[in-house]
Amino acid sequence: MFYNIWADCIKRVSLKENNENKVIRTSLIIMSFLLACNFFVIMMLIQKFFDIFFYEINFTYFSDFVNYILMLIILYFLPALMVNLIYLYYNIDNLKISIKNSAFNGSYILKYTLLSIFGPLIVLWIIWVYYIF
Image 1 (spheres, rainbow, N blue to C red):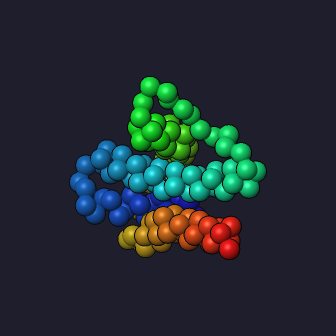
Image 2: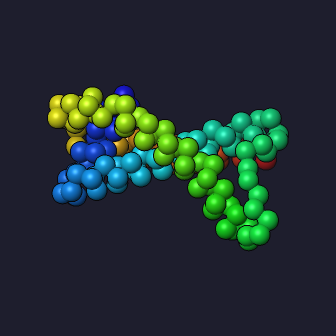
Image 3: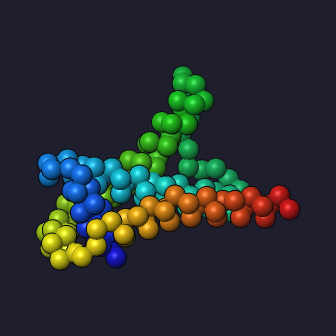
């Protein structure tokens, strides 16, 4: 399934971009962002369940906003980027075959994007309502 989502993402981006390197980079950033969103929600739920915040970095010489942005980038986006880079490195040949044989033109990546962004928001809203009432 992940092959199909990756192939669909690359195919969707290639409709707008002509350069192959730009297509791979753009697809990598999109997929890493979506994976980071999912990872953020999973870690937040685990920390809420155990009632301890163990996955954070505090930079004392930055403001709270900059500290929060750096924490999101270092702890959530960079691991997702590394996972996707390793995935691409080891499976690029299978992915190219999947792109050529794929009949989809953006439907998988659209569903994955909506699920990755709005699914966690709905889950967090349900948990928030459950703990408030």
